[in-house]
Length: 258
Length: 119
Image 1 (cartoon, each protein chain N blue to C red):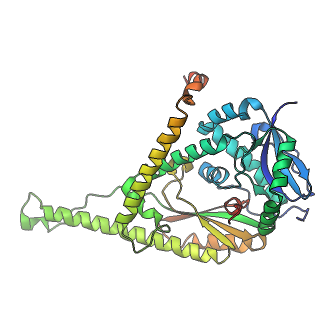
Image 2: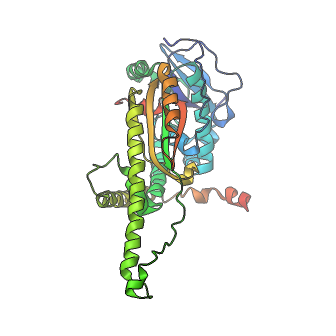
Image 3: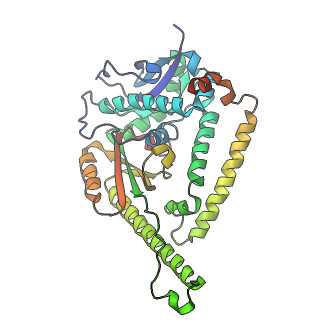
């Protein structure tokens, strides 16, 4: 049977079978390809979608990309339940098994070193949003307009604008302070942290503005305490929203330089 | 050797994860390996740059405060704004460059069936 090899992750050999109904990219169940001390988790995908030209076209299609990303993540999630996977970037594709083996052989030392470093750790994502702001009311300041006549004064207008801006800035300052404090206290439970760019609301569909978007590498044994800490902070900041995601495979910490 | 038992999973997997959470990990993070199908670098780079451009252009001036961790807190917001404008211009130039190298095969035009299906 022809087909390409889509590689999801590299792991240490693990004894637990993956769920029988698990499917990945292209609706295909992932298989294990063992190479010495390493296992690549691989799916056979059709050339019609994953050869160079069709893949290039697909990657420009946000719907295809979203569905494929979810399928990829589905497999990584299942692996995270049974082992510590080293997740590969989306759409890492080889022609055949021997190409995958060659890649594993070439990178064996790095894989093993990184797997040791991440063993028993998971990634938690924490985001802070400011709730959407209400429309600013055009407030009038009674008793002020009289001094300069009913035409209203430029000075009053400027003062209002200045007050509004000051309120806005104070709100931001509070939000930033909260995010900073939260990040500091969560970092105390984490072995490593990454701060990612704030998310685009058009893509996340999350209301409000994303102020903090951070990832924390946390030992599984510490995860419960970490989650409880996040839960406790949720009510601390009126007007702000804290969101927790995970446990993820250690995506943000799998780089060789990490 | 990793233990062969299942780890307890009390928190539920990715329950609160949105598409942006997933894309930022599977596209931007994770290990980068050049497979036999060597197209992913250029295309994924192009796409993530597009996504970042959207981020940079939404609600411009108001968004400028959100990069507090990347800039010295002593810096004025003006400095941050200038930096973002500069970065935006750079990214746009980069997108134009990448699109220029691929101008002969625009992806959108190769998928007429999709547009027909949408009526």
